[in-house]
Image 1 (cartoon, rainbow, N blue to C red):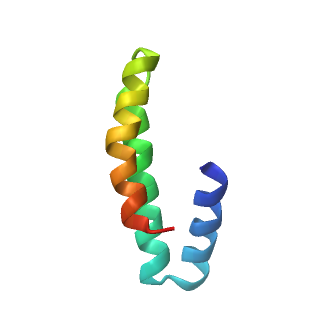
Image 2: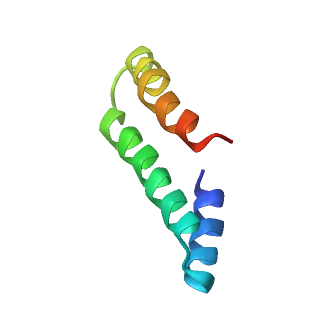
Image 3: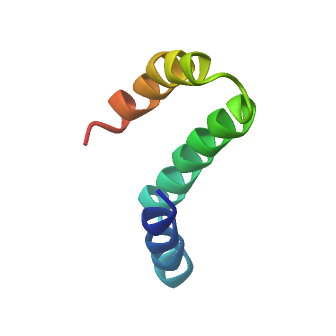
Length: 62
């Protein structure tokens, strides 16, 4: 994830468009989910990732 974020950030700095800005925003949302579940039991982290992360990834439509 960090590698993709760095590439989007470099693109954003170079050309500052809405697509790169949106990508950074969504990646930030993924990082926020990870921060919220850090230190929690593995089964809980998995459940939260499946519920919350899936919605974000589906919205990206990769």
